[in-house]
Image (cartoon, rainbow, N blue to C red; front, top):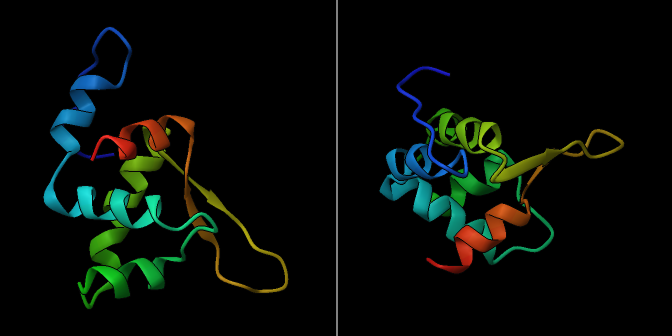
Length: 94
């Protein structure tokens, strides 16, 4: 991952503070409201970014911090992003 990554006592606080852009907050809110998870295209559609690459980088950073997870779907369905336990606790505060 590009960028400066800082660590705090729990290992996530400073990086999460640096990462909390308006788009990341939107992604967390969208995923919080969808228990079944969302594909990259569905997240892009809900955010209205008109480019799946825009949200892709934020999603990868959230995966690296163990805030969301990516689940591969069987039979060629698009994979789904879901909040992890730490992601649920972070998103509930938004």
